[in-house]
Image (cartoon, rainbow, N blue to C red):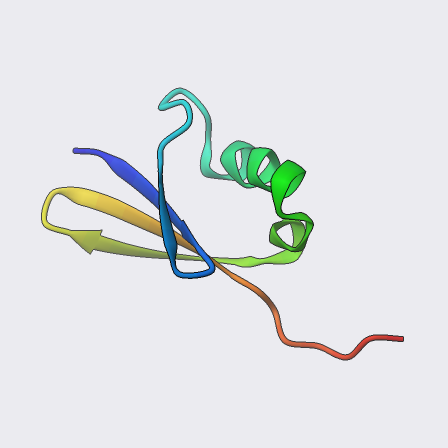
Length: 61
């Protein structure tokens, strides 16, 4: 059973299985700042779990 993280249509392997999903989200936010406020959607793909970071739609300023 593996975890995969998807952002912007790209699949990324689990950086560290001992991290929680929120900790992985914080790690990804270092590279993709918009992930910090993204929604997390969870799906199953066979025995694997896929976490998708989805940007929230909003207005600026």
